[in-house]
Image 1 (spheres, rainbow, N blue to C red):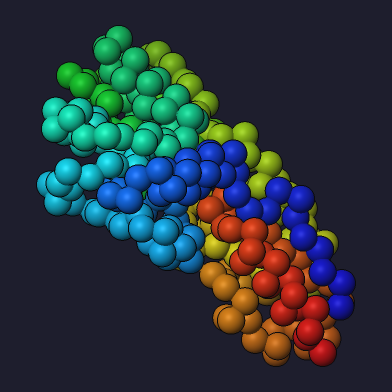
Image 2 (tube, one colour; image 1 turned 135 degrees about the horizontal axis):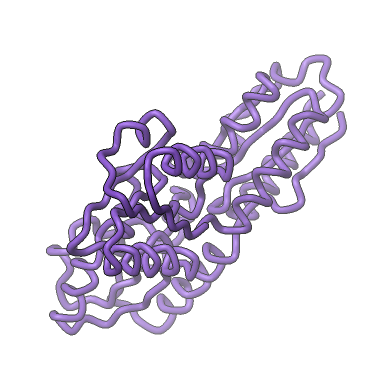
Length: 278
């Protein structure tokens, strides 16, 4: 059985940067925590905990600790809290997420009603939302939601960095139909587009597709959906232990991709296990 691994599978720039910053911080400071999971990989979060980095989900529970800000970023209110309490901060927010926060804030400050393409409860989206002050702000996960938003004449649009470009552009067109002025900042990370395009191409050229990554990872779930639309025999897994040999009966080619928060060692374990499938 031929195993084909997507070229860009695994850590993106922002995640790799955050992980490196976290491990370095753990070496230098024993009293340190992460405000929310650093990335959406339970296995990596476990390794960080073994290095002494605990996960704190409630900012009010942080006391006299150094704080690592996760790659998805935090809200403006949480950021203000950390500074007001003079806590040491290691800001591992992805630079692309920072850019989305900046543009959303700029649009709000210039009087636009702001629409964020993304998932309402995702921590990245919650962070971006908080940067819009004194302006209307809405979140649209899809075209149907965008069609129901009560818009003003001037509308600004940004995106959660891991959104699919097709969804972003479809919502942009819908908003354009409904507004006099639409200002768009395409804040989708290039690495996201590259992974999604690779996934589409690979899913169309294999018999079975494996998508590796945390079940709580938005970008991994999106990769799985993209692949499943092309190839129903697509399986989203977190680790090699979840693989069933029966998936590969009569299979000649299997494709593998992985979300931007998936550690390399997990990908290697999956490839190794597939190599033993009879």
